[in-house]
Image 1 (cartoon, rainbow, N blue to C red):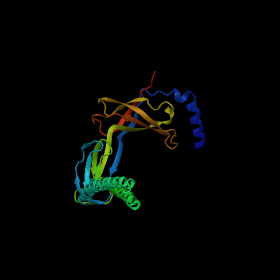
Image 2 (image 1 turned 180 degrees about the vertical axis):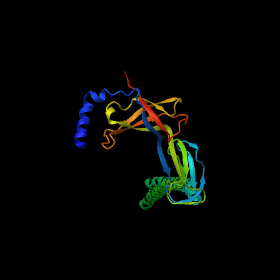
Image 3 (image 1 turned 30 degrees about the vertical axis):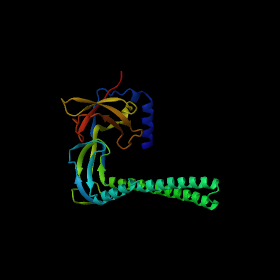
Image 4 (image 1 turned 120 degrees about the horizontal axis):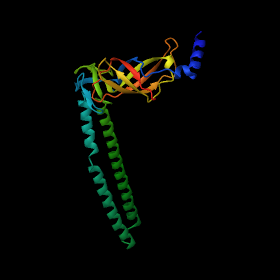
Length: 270
């Protein structure tokens, strides 16, 4: 029985039945939702030191929202930074190498004049090699110290919660002083743009496509907002005889609240 119904539906869509359906004056129920909702948590455990936003606050991408207690990590960064910025060891080894080169040059001149032995010349050259090795080791230690500083800074950054997007704080799950174990601390919702979801009857399948404009009506007598179709489900729900449509509704001023039921009227090009 269901297979026969689907076959009849496909025939109707390919014929004049669906393509003759009019959308311009028809209204469909819809629901306005945030474009995206995210629950934010820290990547590590710790005591919540501060929550710097409240429910209803608008936030921007990269904005600091909350911090864990990070006194230990801050001290570690300070220690490693001091080590990474210390150049005295490199400067000392550079001076030793320069001195070894000068001495070797003098020994070489003496050797040419037969005033120094071959052993003395070889020892002078060896001192240059040893000085170069010490300088290389000092530079490598400095490089490792910089890498250690990067790691310490990364560990500190994981204790700061930043916003991944522009949105509104809809929920605060944890308070200052609580021990947080990777549980959500805040919930953010992106409300510009908004998402409009609607279920349309199967008889108009094929008459709605991505990019198509539509009017969104909140209340009778209120302004009509213009949305645009983003996605049309390619599969029909056989139980209800409907298919889903998602639209994008700009909301730059935040004047349209999410969670509202609405009515939808599609604009059909003549």
